[in-house]
Length: 111
Length: 113
Image (tube, rainbow over all chains, first blue to last red; front, side):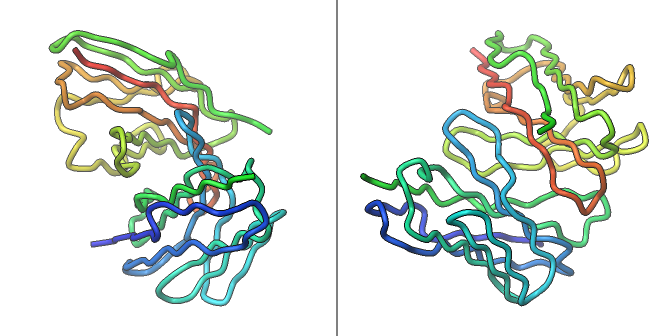
């Protein structure tokens, strides 16, 4: 069964303090690992898709990396507006494209 | 950027009543999904829809649930007889291609009392 585990559950950083979020996955035949940002009471907002080990993608202060067992979302010099819940999801062997989500990491960045 | 639109944003219903949650996916997308998120829990897959039929459904999606794409633009989720445990945020998502990113709507918060 496809599974996604994210750690830590919550992370508090000072503005400018870089850190990483982890997403460990077990899936039979990874067909995509997705990172989303979710603000309270809102829908997930797309950040990145990674397809193969070694792949990296960047957007502003965020960088996502992928290995065969996990993905990291690195946040460099975060700002308060980066505060949100970050969701990791995998698309596995299903031919329908369903995503399996982790429970998320809630990031709080203090000024 | 194009967006997925969901209505209503919040619905309160009595247990046993039928509800219909509505979604307008992005116009050139072909793959459609419903997910739900119970407060404080993971986003969970409910159903996927492609080529005018259900392509996969989860264990949650029992006989009380149904989906329709009645007119080529709207995509609806119906819960026939709501239960207290159906209270959750329901998200619609669409994708142009099965590998492509999924665009999520802002959700409908369903409260069953």
